[in-house]
Image 1 (tube, rainbow over the protein chains, first blue to last red):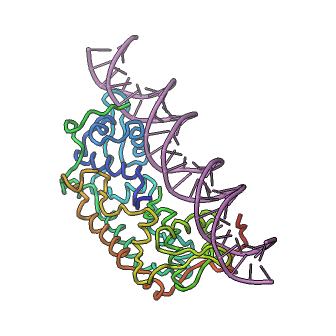
Image 2 (image 1 turned 90 degrees about the horizontal axis):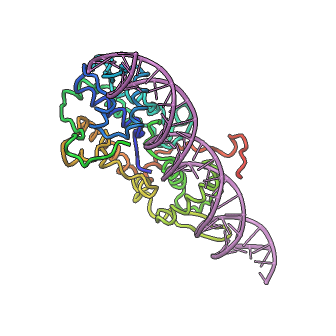
Image 3 (image 1 turned 180 degrees about the vertical axis):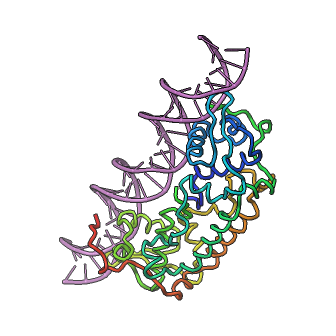
Amino acid sequence: MSFMIFSKTTEYALRIMNFMAMDEKKLYSANDIYENLRIPFRYLRKQMTILSKSGLIISVQGKNGGYRISKSLSEISLLDITRVAGDNKINNECFFGFKSCAFEKKCAMHYKWAAVRKSINNVLTSTTLEELKKTGTHNFISKNSLIFTKKD
Amino acid sequence: MSFMIFSKTTEYALRIMNFMAMDEKKLYSANDIYENLRIPFRYLRKQMTILSKSGLIISVQGKNGGYRISKSLSEISLLDITRVAGDNKINNECFFGFKSCAFEKKCAMHYKWAAVRKSINNVLTSTTLEELKKTGTHNFISKNSLIFTKKD
DNA sequence: TTTAAATAATACCTGGAGGTGTCATTTATG
DNA sequence: CATAAATGACACCTCCAGGTATTATTTAAA
């Protein structure tokens, strides 16, 4: 149910990257990120490792380690992020889920839906972390504004 | 993973209604629908019951029974269908999944994403079964064009 | 050199969407 | 009335995304 466009995992990846974009030079520990985004801690840790393997961020091990965005904010689009998180099928999906839609007879929704898909794609492709940072209306969970939640 | 907009169940509901719209007066048996759409038979049966309880279709029991669309094709929008299938959260969902996005600080993607959500909503609201029928490029699986698949 | 604070690896757990199996009920028709 | 062809009800199974648990490794700094 529920009309999701992104999987929870992708949503997390987007949040994380958006958050880390606030200061692209800073080394954020998983704990820093947890304190601000409240993504389930162990799952967050797992995702950070995946993100770092993907090359979008680099990880520094050991004490005072953490993660840092690996390239210029203007070089990272939201689509890049959704891709490393595994969501990348929007482009060739039929509204009705018919396999043959694209190359045989097109389904009744083909053109209308193609426009929707295109608009999603445009937004994801054209929006970079740079732009998100500039937009500046950040909406993270602040450390102090919340009821305490146990980490483990 | 995979960027889905509709759940499989909703996708099935859309296919089924689209198919039944071809002849709005006809009583289709679950078998008819299965032969054309190849939705897993027992799951299809279950969905048909749900659809008929929702009021979008009516069911006729007994021999020669089946299902028929319950009202004028022009009165059934795709949004109506997605709703009965349980997918109805698109309207108030934040890009990043932040609960507070709408009524507190708006997230950095708020306006861009609102446009996307609106375009999806527009398509689903404005497209009726009537229109799909007129579009006429139907893409069902024909009985003869397929390798035989066991029903049970 | 020891310790503590960080990430990495890996295996396991869990809920729910999607899918099956079985039996009960309804009804047209011979 | 008996039968066959349809839907209805309901319990069960399975897989995997999302989430946990545990142990290993790396490294700054006391």
